[in-house]
Length: 261
Image 1 (cartoon, helix red, strand yellow):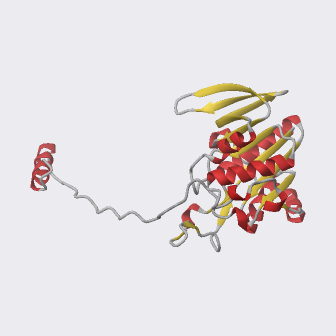
Image 2 (cartoon, rainbow, N blue to C red):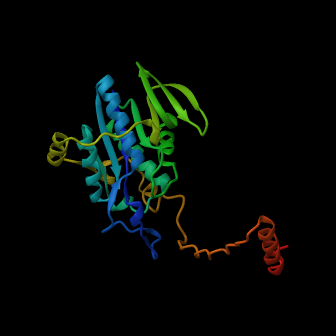
């Protein structure tokens, strides 16, 4: 079974900074981590490999520093890692990102399952995975909390607020993973040493069968026009009275004085 996992290196959520001129994330010098949902995707792929054999390939589109995220996935047990990196990819929205990732997947060739995290914690759009499936013309199974493969059929539980939806589909499929799918394993010492020695493959725009106008900022259907920090809310007034009736009376008086009622 050939499994491809798409991951993203994201800024630590406590360290997110925005460039006010370009309206894009400042990544240089900012601590980065593997997107947490993507770790669930990697773990799911590794478990499927343990059950059915095969190969796990991890893809990431980003700057050279994304190698660190890929090596972490190799340390967890992935077999191969490829970085999709080129200045032409800069500024891409979800549409341009998914287009580029789909092109890289086509270049890899055969696959049975593609697994993504349900969303990235920096953008929270949950769009890239489904868009990859659309570009490739395959079935998409989103918000998945359980995966079972039997031959050429996959059976999954889609997570809802109060229940699960059980779905069956024929391979190949794209799956987006939720946190409840599993608990990601920690890298072993042997895995870390192997990851340190591993060579990360690199795809540039020249390596992919893509239209230049569909890449990066130029190929993005959406662009951020403005980013600003919302004004801080002023603290409310705490009414302290010995009785509920007295509190209500004072509240109504304040609302009347403010001409709200």
